Length: 310
Image 1 (cartoon, rainbow, N blue to C red):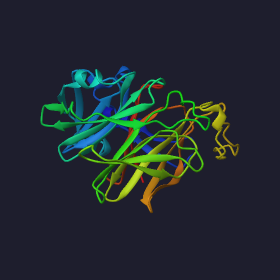
Image 2: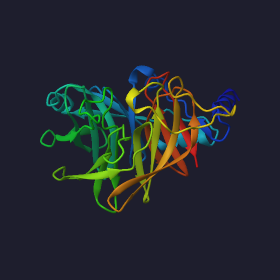
Image 3: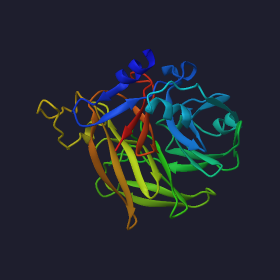
């Protein structure tokens, strides 16, 4: 009875009154906000939770755990550990290393983007091989991803390649820089899974950050998030009404919404969906699951893992 009450309490309606999601309580051993999760990826029946700063082991959650929560029953804590092989050899190759960001699984391969500090003009793309108990990183392929810069050439602070997905029809990966509101020259990158050929692709400019994307069955969804006062010279122009009828003030307020993306005619087109929340929750990972998406925050204001049905 207590667990059913908990599930009831975790079914939450976003502030604007349109979207309803279910919060999935993580097992206590992986729920602490200090994990600072940055991505979600699925390998077989495991949902891989990668921290921004992974250590020797990272963990995954079986889909039976998620399904139990969504069905209103008590889940078993089905956690699996992956030993991260060659992790520190990869980190040693990255000047200004600031952690792992996006992740996507293709077969038995996992691909990660790695963010760097403002002094490095590149982020990086790496890959590893998955098995039941290990992720073995490939130290021979560490690919540079050029960062976007401001109109006058200066770097953007606290911005990197936070999104990656696999385009099955093209057999290529798509990575996006998180800030993409440069009219006329916003861009992402297409790259083959052997990590040998990088190709530029135009991206439709959009307000706010793109903090993750995921493709499944030809459809791509992503997270569009803004923390108040970011990128001051690129003040958002989009006006969004809150439930009280007032427009959100982007200098003081936050917003999170899901976006739908389409790769067509050598461009990434973007269509915003309704606002999820105006709360300042730093949503970092998205993964299509059943008839919706799983989403996770990092550590701000706490670790929050949800299922959002469409």
